[in-house]
Image 1 (cartoon, rainbow, N blue to C red):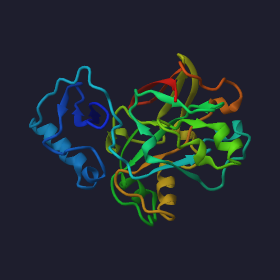
Image 2: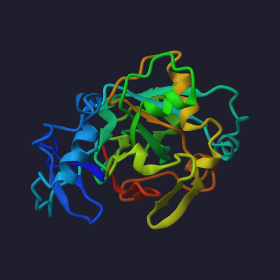
Image 3: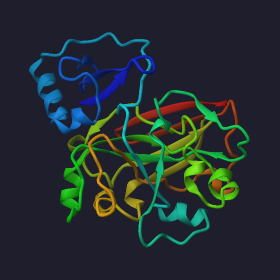
Length: 283
């Protein structure tokens, strides 16, 4: 089962897609796919309704795909969590997770346009595995507890403006991370129990059809479970919160590729979670 939200911006409705590709209207189960839905065992209720045949099939052709989670309260991000990416950034692998935040209003649909900020010189792409929290994570003591707090996974593009991040602001990362449209998310939310091992997923990104990143989550410095457990010592993660778990090597910051410009097309995909595509436009 895949969960998704379809419709115009601000008018998205909840749907579930079965393994045979049929899409079903989920509005009899929930008004939206959000933190309240996840906290109330929404995934289990949606699966039960799907298996019982009580959901009506939906004609969704032509509908826009929105982010699979509505209005996350927090987008927590991890920097330099792949050793090769840390190296291409000119840094030693971190001994503790590097944490920063993106404004929640950066989250847009997986096929929505990304806006190149005004005065931008170094807009960059970053394919990432996004964790969606399903249960409150607070002072967790084990990896098993951490994994039990995860509702599911989706694809994230942690778009960055490197000059804003590292040069203009003197190293204030959030200034290069919070520009509008800078977190395309989706296309679907896949329940954690249907993903299996989150440390065995291939990640790829492309710019104008040319390969950029190609890695696997097994190369993370800090595993998904370790990240959620660690974060819970310093903040409370609530249902519906998103954690971007870091990006592998192959970004423009490395100097190997040009930065993005209006008209470019970025595609990001993760094994079993789908593929997203954005066209760059000027803000």
